Length: 571
View 1: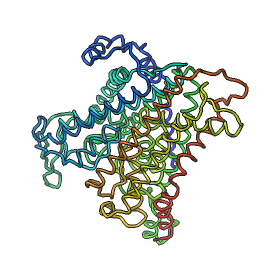
View 2: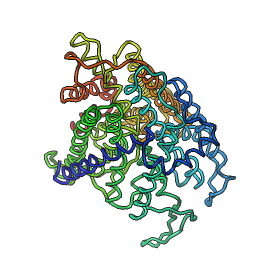
View 3: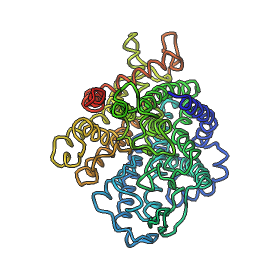
View 4: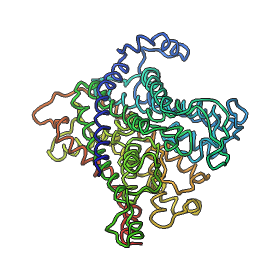
């Protein structure tokens, strides 16, 4: 790690942690209906409820809440699919983009609705302005809102006593979109425009380069999509180059704020959790566990990339002791370099964002393994908006269960007994994504259709397939690259992984919320395990690493680990 790397990491954490508390308080007030923003926007909010036939005084049980979210997101899939299939005949299509093919449209619809934003297409060559805005950008808001309201429902499960409801999904979705996501995205979009990001409806521009060659520059409403792409941990780029494109990410300052935006709401929700649960120390403990894991992974990834490629060094100096000057720059945007690219890769895969400024396929084997591991942990190291926190709380329940077994007591978390039903839901939530990721990888490497998309041989090709299904099942959306995935086989299989990776976790989490809300809160005793101190933070980190990662160790050995050994053996 260079001094620049330590300075960048330290500054990033300092700014992030300074923003966690004020935004966390604001989100808590919004979800409790006590914010000044609700008083200001109340008439418009009430109008929405009247038009939709929603009663503000009605609440839902967990099953009704889950069905509402499934219906809401299912309709979203249909809307996004239809807009892609009809875009040629719709307005705001100055380049006359053709209708998107059925398998690609289906994959993209599921991808954006599940907050995955996996893209098997080039945005500027496939999607019209209307599709980018009305289909993709709108879903960036709504999928982010879905993740946040699920964790709010789970927090209510801990905070309420002998209750039969966890809130109203329609009210929660409306408030988080109106009062949190829209204002933050608007502010961030203006900031990006000030740095040089474009926002227009102009036709693509033909320009003459210094080499006297004509080049076509894509235009469009970029800043507005880029803002919620980061704020909502979505990750789907307007351009195929994603955040490496200068129209999306114009300057190093814009790049820093994009990295900050990815973790902003996930970090703030930890404080929201503590505040709504009645003990802010609980939120700080969860945030501490996330931060420790993040720093460890960031140091590892940046160090591996700064180390460089030993074969390149040997080719220059005939001695692997002289390493590649400046680190491994292959596949990285020259404006940002090794350190910023390594940090960005860790942030975007720790969260379920998927935006990239470098090709992860070109990282060193171990450098590329770190983003893979972060997704395989369930993306709970800050994670996606809402999904990261409810994933970490699932691991917290697992941690207190393990501690209860060790001391022979019924486990408790925030005064609620963790019993058989909660552990069944915990097991489902933890195991569904490894099953999808590993099962999808196995199908792909054993079938002719899956093998047809693999262009890189042996361990690296396996890593590309494993990365794709890990990214899809954990709703990240970043790609290792090098895999030809825009085929009917991969579009269908990855869409299945994305849908069940999202709602196969959300449904048991909501079921757990309903069960916890119905329980009475127990008073703490001398035998109660404190869940806000260093001991619990350590236990939580250990649980995440052991339970979250053990499923993937054999697959990692077949991919990046063996590739690393071959690389350093000169092969």
